Image (cartoon, rainbow, N blue to C red; front, side, top):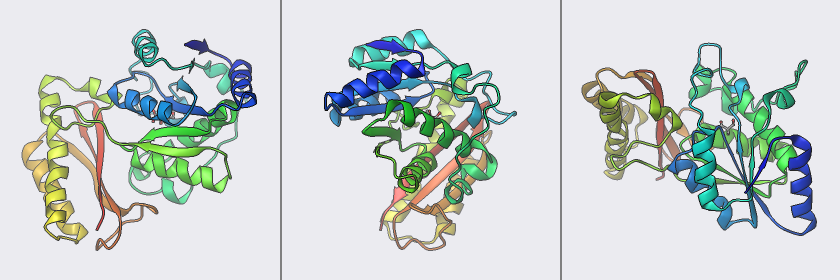
Amino acid sequence: MEAIQNIVEIKTWSALCHRRGRRIGFVPTMGALHEGHLSLVRLAKQFSDHVAVSIFVNPLQFSAQEDLAQYPQDLRSDFALLEELDIDVVFVPNPREIFPPGFQTKVGVSELSKNLCGKFRPHHFEGVATIVLKLFHWVSPDIAVFGQKDYQQCRVIEQMVQDLHLDTSILRGPIVREKDGLAMSSRNRYLNESERECAAHLYRALTLAKHLFEQGERQSDVFIHAVASYIRENMPSGQIQYIQICDALTLEDVVTIHKKCVLAVALFLGKARLIDNIELDP
Ligand code: PAF
């Protein structure tokens, strides 16, 4: 596994792979890797000849009030985990090279960034789209893999790729859960022991909604009410940010479920902001 830290080198590596007719798979990350990330890497390996993983905590996607300074970083453990998966390149760019003084160009995916997390994190998806576009520009991946836990992020990237006619296919990796159902996330490290135990209720709330759906319920307000009541009862210290049912493609709110939707939840538990979702597909 080769560690690359600058743009010229990653472009050279990518050009060489392409000259040899090899397909590049790419998994962009912010590090603090866990089994969820590793599952994305395995998926990338299945669909490509060479895999690159980037590790970069992107300041552009954090607001001033958010956890950029505390965001967990553990390069040593990240490298060890990636070595085991036998990937080709880990790209750890230098923030000063990525965002040099005077940097001012950003990309926005306007409509898909408005709802859900976008309502509460107004510049977040612009930050995500901008860094992902830059990374795609240097790595030139044939495929790139993103986790479905960040459902809105997946849609934003898919739309950006479509709108800008990029030559990268986006694959979604399914949500990887702990034994008790908690979706894996680097931010789960912020949970203390009792919060961690309580956090499992978030998935139970989604499972409850899934059962209602399987029994034929189609009204969004019924799901939202059921999920909110479950969370209030079982996660009393949780602060719900949103519970929404949205069209799986447009991410607009849906009143009655006629086609594929996503039920998405964001809540704060102690210092951690947890997000999770399930698809409801009639
Ligand atoms: O999902 C993430 O870890 C980040 O948003 C990403 C895609 C690496 C961009 O910084």
